[in-house]
Image 1 (cartoon, rainbow, N blue to C red):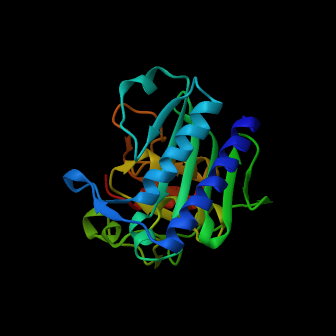
Image 2 (image 1 turned 90 degrees about the vertical axis):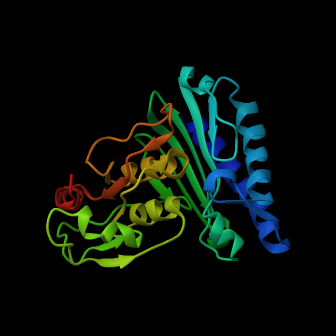
Length: 257
């Protein structure tokens, strides 16, 4: 596991060098088929680097990436890499800073090593199962907030639609970041109290941040308060809610079934 974490953090830093080079020099972009969102030369270059570096180092591991063709072979693997070459591609295209490289190793459905790197912000979040979470090598911890009213929450606007809640929408301090991996990391860091996304979410956006949050003391679940499992045949989870344990219970308890 420690070796896997070292492998992930080294690969994340190498991905950052490629991402920064394209960010400075420009990258062509186009829309994926079927309304799947934009992609750039940088996404593909980072994906190629990660595939070569990680799969060469661990040839027995399965592979799931947003920018690679998926197939059933990974389902038979005990361990699987789950990566998002650039999370926040629209932010990247627009010249913003809050885009990330998200890398994880999953064993039998559970994340055991993870790294999220935001090269323009000089942030590298990392975690290994049972060994805590760090930001640039320093331990991080979620906030101890327990009260839902007034909590600082990262979520997109549709999450606050009335139909998502059992009663009145709670009075929350609302914020947003375009990269889902970054939202997860900011809660792990204690910058925000909680995050939620209530729609189906791709595993590559979530897997690395899920472990970083757990190792920082958070409770992490799907929108129904169920556990997150990864390397599913259809690589999605039913939303994500994350916060300290007491606040998490309050937040999921307020959400509609």
